[in-house]
Amino acid sequence: MFGMTASVASLALPSIARAQANARIVVVGGGFGGAACARALKRSDAKLDVTLLEPNRSFVACPFSNEVIAGLREIGAQRFSYDRIAADHVNVIAQAASKIDPQSRKVTLGDGNLLSYDKLVLAPGIDLNFEALEGYDEAASRIMPHAWVAGEQTMLLRNQLEAMDDGGLVAIAVPANPSRCPPAPYERASLIAHYLKTKKPRSKVLILDAKDSFSQQRLFENAWKEFYGDMIERVALSQGGRVTAVDPKTKAIVTEFGNYTAQVANIIPPQRAGRIADTAGSVDHTGWCPIDPNTFASKLVPDIHVIGDACLGGGIPKSAAAAIAQGKSCAAAVIALLSGKVPEPPKLTGVCYNTVAPGYAFSLAGHYQPRDDIFAEVEGSASPVDAPREIRAREADAAQNWFKTITADVFG
Picture 1: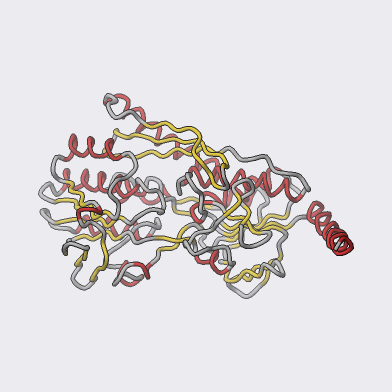
Picture 2: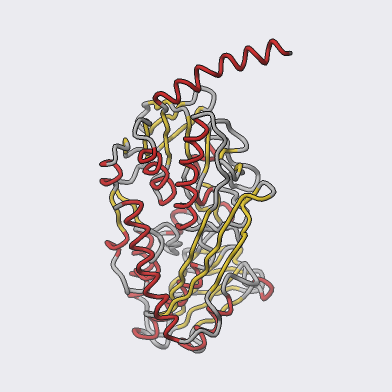
């Protein structure tokens, strides 16, 4: 046994030495987490061979896309190119990863070419779990948009609102957790209500919710009462709010206790880790990727790290700010591991802003560290429920500045 251990160690050492000299790191996915990771890797060590795989030529951000839906912002303000990342000498390839072979440490590109890696970082975000909702698939989403991936779907929902008759019903189906940005459906309901109040005041918003409670619920509900009166109605899980099926032909929405027909139906289905993570073997029975929170290393596949929304992150939310923090911390961990060092335990900070009307927002912030093999929130703060209007206005300004800061940091 001792001889076998020594042989394995002697074979491993040259591999580590090669990685230190000219390590090849491939990052799959150019969202907030992947782009932040690729940039941090190259800026930390210019000798690293860093490749970012992203099939889209530009990135369309989800934060503030609810304002686009409500006509308060144009979609162009959400779009960011990868030019500055490429200028940092990251090899940006506009292709998807179609296959990953962990044994040979190779990634197959959409055109059939292969990329070798010493370390692979997966930042695939989420995929919509169409199989989890009867009657809902990609074809149905062109009639009953989810708008949970920013871009074409965002504009589809906006256009449907603009075409809707005054007096129509807008229904929003909200999935159970875990999901991307859990407060976002309620921000969306708020801003759609703002649009309707100003353009189509006889209309209503109906939230069909697969949860009984949600993040910052009192803040949202107080704001709804103040701004929108009875324009927004929410049916919680225990009241029969969970959507079980849809019929795109009639725009019927089926719940456990009754059926609804909406003129505009925004169906947000359950979610899971992006498909390439499953292809790589890093997804478990939950549909998400278990990781070592100290290094973001997959618990299922060697030499693969997973960051962002695809992770089983414990207490840390699936959000843009969290993905950026994970991307930077993962870069530091990968560099330490390639150098034969023990990475420092990450200390992550995430903040989330929610806008319920122009000039009125509130926030939620948290600090997260590894604890008992997951990320745990060690400190948090939230906007006070009874804050005066001036505080809400300042938070609305802070939200705008936050978005400018994070997008400049990652893409600028």
